Amino acid sequence: MFLAFLGVTYIRWDKTQCDGPSTETIYSGQVGGGHYTHSGASVNYICLPNHPDVAQPLKSHDYYGYLYGSEYEVFDFNKPQGIRSGIAQHDVACAACLAKGKISSIMIPGRKTCYNGWTKEYEGILMAGYHSHKAASEFACVDRDTEAIAGGSKNENGKLFYPVKTVCGSLKCPPYAADTEVLCVVCSK
Image (tube, rainbow, N blue to C red):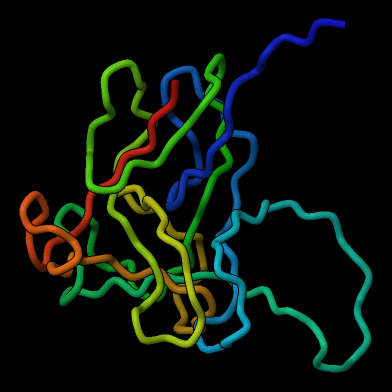
């Protein structure tokens, strides 16, 4: 039996819809992850769908991993150029995307353009957790045209997004420059 190849999937952090060339939105959602103060918290950000299937309640004790929502920790003093103002403490949106007819996708940190032969799905700013929080985090390419989830602007913490800046030393400068934001792009082929 021959199955037609559909495409490659990726998460569009910070948006509710996918709008790349020949791209469809599989689902829209909100970003979740472990709490930034928990030393055993999950490392990765996950894109949770807005319409989950309801599960059974768990017994009341503390032997569980925890899943929290996510919010922006982007204020006027640490806002990268091009990111809109007023997103601090707002909950982070995401979308699961399908790039039709493609076989691979990659997030390239440090660039806003794709290499030859690759198609740009979106560009943004590299974000991660705060460097001295207990919980580890991963790098995520967050779209510059930020979207937040409606009604979520309280400081409730959880999995947090901070802009990333460069630190020269073992990171070679040049080609990088000290104390600068890090661009990123998601490409498909």
